[in-house]
Length: 237
Image 1 (cartoon, one colour):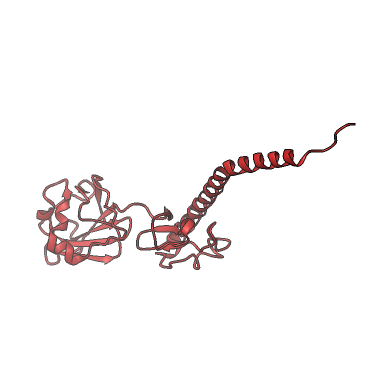
Image 2 (tube, rainbow, N blue to C red; image 1 turned 45 degrees about the horizontal axis):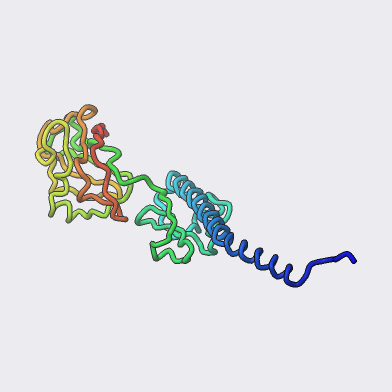
């Protein structure tokens, strides 16, 4: 008589083997799913970063902690991260943040981040001929120089004056602190530092440069040091 089907023992053996294989494969599947979520979050962060960059080009500095001012104009819809939480925009540090698997952007252990602003760096220097003499001088009203940075600095004006922060700079035509009156240094905007010229002929616009020697005292709002050793030409107004 021909035997048909499987015995109970054979079925139990097959089920046991399948359970063992499934248990062995589970960590790999979970890792794959988590990696896929992280990849999706990174893609979203980059998209939001590009949207903020366009916004800031057209409308000025972005100040919201979420994407509400981007939605509809710069983003088709407000994206939600793969763990079901809204993305956070940390305007002080220039980062777009996903809270990651623990869903908490306030902690940093598993956060996924992407910068939407470049690193803090000196990007432009402009001579202001305040007395309209056509020469760099201090007659009647001292000329000024404006130092523009790529992003907001945490360094306050009081810190500049108290710690000699400006000694971190170098000018190609001589000593920086001999050329500029650092006691007059002040921020005229979140990214622009201005100070008076100290002596006649302190520099030659269009030729001389200013460079940050080191960024030990100059940090952005996230605490990252300013980029150094990049000579920036002093341009006329």
